Structures are given as C-alpha cells and as structure tokens.
Amino acid sequence: MQRAAQTDVTAALDRACTALREQASPVTVQRRALLEAFLGRTDHPTVDTLHEDVGRALAGINRATVYRTLETLVELGLATRVAQSGAACRYDPCVERHHHLVCERCGTIEDLFDAEFDALRPPRSASGFAVRDFSVLFRGLCARCARRRSKAH
View (tube, rainbow, N blue to C red):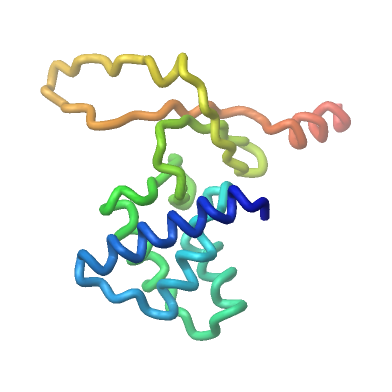
C-alpha cells in the first residue's frame, strides 16, 4: 500500500472510530478488524466477502456483526450501499460523489469519478419525492470479460 493511501485509511479509521464512540457504539476488536479490512478497499465487498476475509484473521466474528457495523457506517455517512437488482448489496467506503461501472458477467464494480455526471440535476418528481443524493450506475462488460467474450466468438 502506498504511503498516501495508508494515511487515508488511517484517517478514515480514526474518523470511523470517533463516530462510533460518539454514537455510544464500542470499538471492539471485531469492529476494528472489520474497519481495517474495509476502509481501504475499492472492490465494493459484500457482507459475506468481508465476513470471510476478517474471519481468516479473527476466528469467530459473527456475520451479523459485519452487517450491523456496515449499516452503522452507512447511517453515519462513512460508507455507501451500492445496491443492484437481484444481487447482494455491496458496500463502498468512498463517500465522495462518484459513479459506478458494473460488469454484468463477473460482477466487478469500478468507481467512476466524472464531473459531467456530478453536474446532473435530478428530475423533479410529481409525487414529491425529495432526492437527497444520486449516483449513476453503468452496466456492461469489464475489459477482461469483453476480451473473453470476443475470444469465444
């Protein structure tokens, strides 16, 4: 891990621990291990992925602890949920405005930072729906899956 990225993860870990304590949520060994495993990731892991990863280093961590901790981070604004129809919910530690590229074949999700999409204005809703935030999600094939597909044809 590069020094700048490591510093960012350390700062994010400090922010998360402070926010949890302010909510009277103790920063247990399990939660800290989960935060350390999650905050530097860019692969948008599922609860099961994180449970498996943290479980290798910390036997006995409960799947419900992973889920509750991630949902608490979302509530605190320290993570976002990337939901896809028909797929397990994925979590993203990057909370600055960005968008996603989703591979329909392998499920990879890539972050997309693009000022043009950031400038979009959400439509007005006749039902009175109040948009709080938005991100654009593009579906298609990642480069690896596109290459495999072209070789198969």
